Amino acid sequence: MNEISRRYGPRLLRLSLGLVLFWFGVLKFAPGLSPADDLAGRTIAVLTFGVVDGDVARLSLALLETAIGLALLTGRLPRLSLAALLFQMAGTFTPLLLFPSEMWHEPFAPTLEGQYIVKNVVLVAAALALAATTLPAAAGRGRRLPAPPETAP
Figure (spheres, one colour):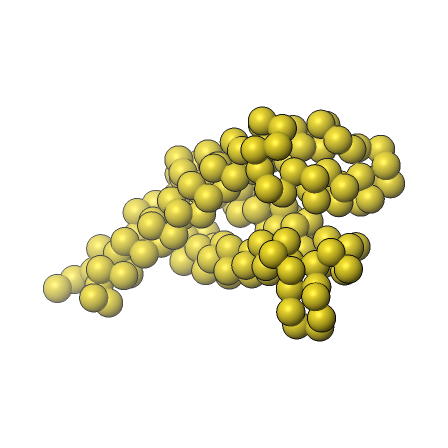
């Protein structure tokens, strides 16, 4: 099992992260299809001091998430895609601080929206694990992530 995990784990992790980001990004292209539309729009409006709001925020986030997802799915631009993912994830946690009454019933008891955000801790951990297992081998910008190294029997 250890050999299988070592051989296929990083690739499966990259593909699953890519699929989640791509899927959630595509949902945001259609107004009202993503349960995060309203919250994401309000968060971006606050973070940009009202410069970006509404449809522009939703479409910008849709483009970012879809691009990150495609990069991860194809294995292209590994450093950029993981950096963009961590940047995007940092933004997803800000509603916990910006809108606490909507995110928490009580301390340590998140609302459904809060749970939607808190689960992103797993995505961040997955991105960091992927970076640790694949980026040192990806020398050079724009190169595909290499296949995990073959292990001797």
